[in-house]
Length: 401
Ligand SMILES: *Cc1c(COP(=O)(O)O)cnc(C)c1O
Image 1 (cartoon, rainbow, N blue to C red):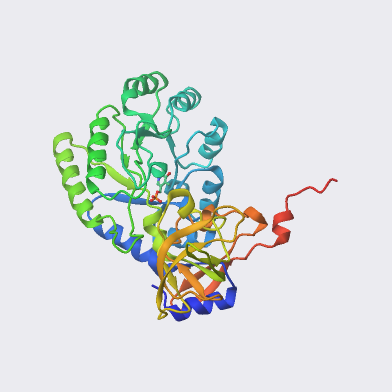
Image 2 (cartoon, helix red, strand yellow):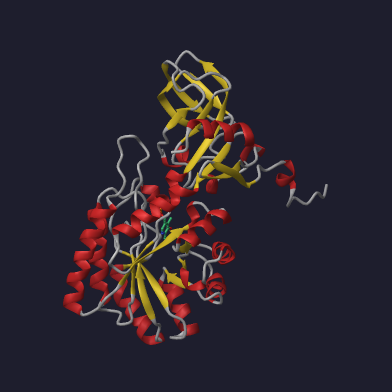
């Protein structure tokens, strides 16, 4: 963790609310993954929708990871950050076929996730451009229904029960299927889910002779609350290696395994600092009202997500119970009944695990502009995104009255 002194220094230098990312933490998380899977052909594609600042993408590119993208602009950002087309994977959902065609022109790997698109792609390109197919294995997993994507009601992937239909299309159009993909959700605690998913995928391989890659998506968990644990990647790697070994002995096939970690790589690298505007005592509680809201960090309101909060400027204060709320004119609660060292007006509160889906989901609701972003590395820090201003709010407006 970055020291309290450095965090306070950055809050003073750049103002609040402020996002800070620690470069070394992203690198060490990546090392944990590559170390665990060493000796087994495995690739990691950073899911850039978690945090897409171009500086972060460049850091990820230098580490040697690939990039998982979900939109044409993410593909373009990845290319600008230095990723080669073959290091980029495009996994869209419910996009128009024209976007898929535009991405194809850039030469990246493409995951197709519905029958209609598969058909259009096959009819248009036949076997001239390899594709991957995103399957829905119908495994219920993930921290919250909103972040679970593999269950029966999910809009993601092509159901494994539609295998016959997929096969018919592949046969008729000559599609070259080079990989199969699945992503069952975020924050999977039980590594059994990954192993179950791997089994389902391995069963599918026989149906597609050209398969070279199995992409198991993400779901790697990092601890948010103090009593939570990260996904045990060492144990997972060990069990997966043995399952793949067995598969290889039985089928004679060696498959590359791909993963798409987002949170795992960047969540813990991120810190979000806010300043306390007011302390408001009501008959029921004590509110700490801070200079930000769900416009800047929406996870607590959207997913009931827990973020650890520290009082940076009064760490030794007497512990009291607070409800931390934002400054938006809309219910805007970061947490209820949180024990914190006494919070005074002007104190700096720190949200941990702010790297993933923090700034990335920020908006300028209430015409409160988006925060600045800072990169921290070895005691040094610099701005990687300026705080937005009123001019930014007006930038694309056409004044016509
Ligand atoms: C969001 C997403 C990920 C990343 O999920 P995390 O929980 O952030 O690791 C990976 N793959 C796909 C297809 C996604 O949509």
